[in-house]
Image (cartoon, rainbow, N blue to C red; front, side, top):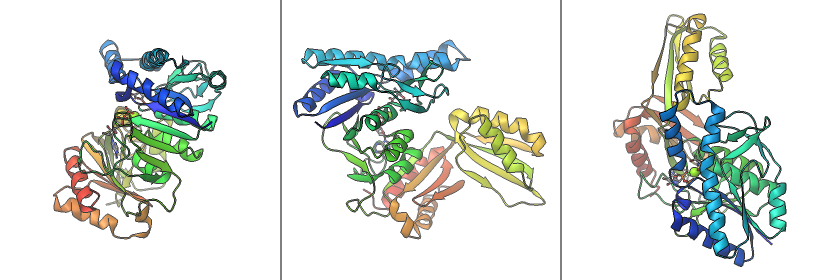
Length: 403
Ligand code: ADP
Ligand code: ASP
Ligand code: MG
């Protein structure tokens, strides 16, 4: 019998009607002869509301307690979904991440999955039940409840699909698949029918938040086919699979954007070996994720180093850079949170020169200033002012005829 992992995002379980519709769909999938493991997110904006509640109670928010709090959202939806399944005569049981043995490291609020035991899942399946698992959470090697970072239910679903050897991991959401740009910003964006893991990784890494980055990495490493589709229309959506001949051979596949970045500049540092090493070692020791780095050519023996970090890490990055400014011999540290990144992603960029040039010309024609640039073999990204980014996405989408 085929085994399907079905993950339902927040809007898909947003209210009682939606939960009943999801239960119907699971019952239908079972009638068609598949075994189902369901993974659920918290209902609607529940996670945001819990975070808001924490913000209004506490300035310190010990990470252990943060995880205890925000992991509760998924417990609500998992138990309600099992109740709705019971009404349909489907035998199901809910499990927390800890109960199914999702073992993580101790990095609270963004823990990484180290291992999935899954015994209870296998037992439930063997007993003919539908296991309904709370996404986004696990238990650490120190036996504490952890969460996997925003969007983490995708990672739960892929990890379960990998250890169970599922035939497919279906990600149900509020759009009908992965589009050539965020459909909220570019209404003419088109749905991509098949996309490679590599392209999807670049999209997820550059702000295409329809799939969590770590979930795509995990799916690629374990070769778990993903099917991103709508829980509103139930129509077939986008398959994320290994690159093959059936893929669209467009040079540019998608335009993504990310407004959650900030830029830090350390100015007037002496241009000599070891300076960058010391600065970035100090940032790494604080678990700060650095993205783009630009070092200017030196003038009179000193230079500026700029880098981008997620907004959430900005305070930590500034503090760390300032703490080391004197030892680095830097003259100052400045920051700009009002920046955003716009990126072009496409496997065809490997073999087509000139894409970056067209990107810069298109932005120039729109009078959008480029602050920083970075490239990989299948991506080109520019940092621009946050207020310009939506315009940048729309003009690039049009310039590369992706509509
Ligand atoms: P869920 O709660 O189901 O996990 P998310 O909000 O995490 O849903 O992801 C779905 C959203 O991702 C869509 O509503 C859409 O606005 C956004 N999105 C951004 N970029 C893209 C893209 N390229 N294709 C599809 N959706 C995208
Ligand atoms: N509920 C969590 C979040 O909002 C996890 C998820 O939805 O994937 O980030
Ligand atoms: Mg999501």
